[in-house]
Length: 446
Image 1 (tube, one colour):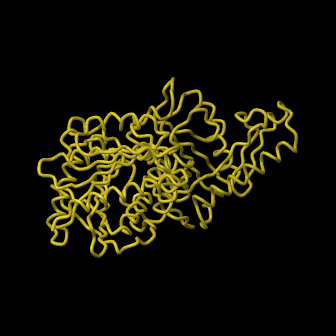
Image 2 (spheres, one colour):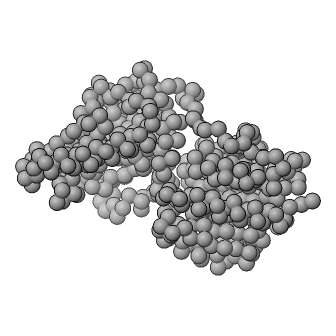
Image 3 (cartoon, rainbow, N blue to C red):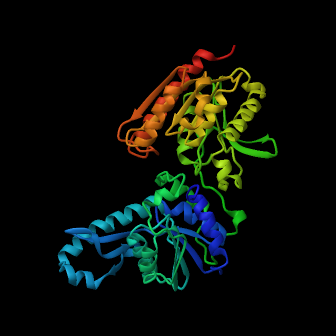
């Protein structure tokens, strides 16, 4: 199994590194799940990363059957055999194309913004996705890449069935697949963490990757994250924890009423737009925030560390001690905001004897992974889950039964794990702000 999409991409990148070389290589990630995988492949190949936005053109009365594909730049690929077989009319085809063309344009603007697409003419296009079920989208992407002028098309995926892989060899010059189970059951079953990827994450990864350049990839050391300025000046901090140095961003408003340490799960970072948005809401409410990565860049791809809750909690406790040693923070209440496995680490650390943590909030987290430690948590704890995230909701309900401290469970209707639905993340932010401000007001020292 793969830890997550970044782990899958790192492994795929190692496989491709010896097979695909040269400055003419372009990595094309299929949004959204293929972009984190493609990001790691692009890093391994020192190649630029771009999205390839395609839409299958489905037969009106049988949408799962495609009569062609449409890509940006109005690139059409039509399967004349299907058109003849189903006797679809020109008018019906035009109606489908118009609808899908609008969706292609919307997605291109969302993911790439004002940047121009990477020119594929005469280059090697490596099309990447997080897995292949039927292969229809990957097939369309390969066809569109070819139509845009790619001299060679390679399809690279972590997992897919032998039958699907064989059929795709008709559209790609080469197909590289790490795992080929006879029975797939579903792409997500091959990942420990198959959390849905938000649009914001796609945009962030594209910004971090090498931008388009005439000579190919930009040197890795010149790649930077393009981020909007935070609402308050942010200080870059480094905290030494044993043999490793952890990096973070610290924001402390004037006359802050407390400080919240963010503990994210795998596949996220202190640069995550979602985390930065949540932090900005807390900053505007007069709360300080510390966005920190508890794992080094190398450790993020080691399955043993990603899910080592005790290790993460131990580091979090040491970071909290470091924060308490700062003269300006001595009188400030401390809270933890955790997501994914970070929620379990936050609760584990809050259960330590002598912990000064006043409040904990879990957003779509896995508090159940804290196990028996839940009963020792004394900090007021709020669990927030999406109403459509049924499995995580059940796990949170079970974890709540193990808590003996003041606690609450809030369910955001119609929201999924990443709370990307309209208004969902704003609801999470409001609940989080209110929980911390209320409990910090009760516990402030001095």
